[in-house]
Image (cartoon, each protein chain N blue to C red):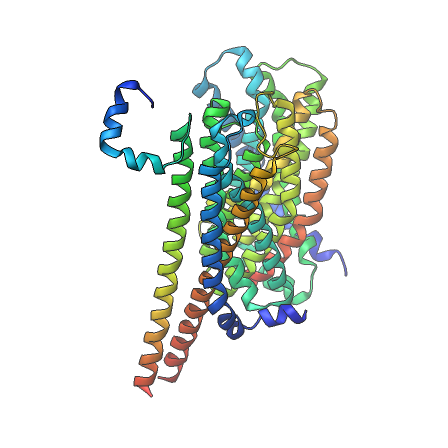
Length: 71
Length: 245
Length: 221
């Protein structure tokens, strides 16, 4: 992770960016993996639920429109 | 019963959830964000618990809490539906299942990733909590598969309620047997995340993360329930149109 | 309530299970076949086989209970026997329990009785432990059949419900499998395991009939 050879490159590319990330001494990859899993699973759940709700709502609205057309 | 019956009315539920769900989304997201900020940036690492890796706690422990709580909620909703036949209780149980399975899977996945640097293995058969949560996931999957296999909504509701109640009664026994199984095998290297004394500096971010995840979960359940109510209304409408035509 | 419908359902289930499964031969063949596949897969080192033998027999027992239970209630739904019981006001939970018990008698008990032979093949020492083991497999099998019966009743109207039964029943098998294998191994701290096995089997016998009855009432609608 903290190979001395990489430090300059890191400073050039994203010195500012790195300051914003939390400082993790070890196991950083595992920690990011956990929060990444959380983002994917919870984000996926939120998106899936939203899409489902929108689809249900529009199906109901279509139904009501066609009901008015029929009557 | 008075409060229950006010929740039993889909019309009132739609009105209530129309403002309650957005509130829960906002509060949940804010609390989760605060917990993340505290957990990843502010709190000092605890060398006693393996250094920085304990920062995973702020997502793993809320997921574990929701895994247990959501199955209990599903079993209670199933019981309410089975006894009083409130349609909304069935809608709630149906909505909880996939979301509960998601958080249960998250608990397993983060526990596994946490286990690798801590125990040196991705999967620890001797850890009672991992095994209990795994069986909880199977209970959720069985519930969803059974509902999906039924050919009518009424049958899905009844079969699901029976299974959720049987599963709910079995959960304490499963947990007890797994505890006993693992206590025979447990090796001393296991580090417990819920130690007997947890410093207040960790406790507050943890509690707030747990509350945030619960609020987000509640908001998602409400949205799914709204979607189910709309779907059922559309189906009734379709049936009425067909009958009238 | 007269016990007549319960007895007749029991007798009929016993006859069906016995005739439809070539006596106890079919379940026994499946049980032995499943167990014998394992050494082919993991090797034949005697120490290892002795260690894993009891566990393999538990897994084989669980699998054979799932396989034999798939159609236990489906025929009653299809030929209208279930409707007749319900119309006659017969106690469905007792009938379901009697049928499940009949299937355990024809497909579960023979496996328990055969377990000493398989245990010997897995390098166990000959002795009284083998008979105690048969008793434990019998008790555990009874719990397997009753929880599996709940899965079978719930999926009685589902075509090809076998996999569904397995998914539903396997988490419910966990306590029995754990207490059973602990009782077999006689591990340190496992002294209470036989009692816990009895208790969890009694729990299954007490709860499962009502769940099966509720599920069968739903299947009849």
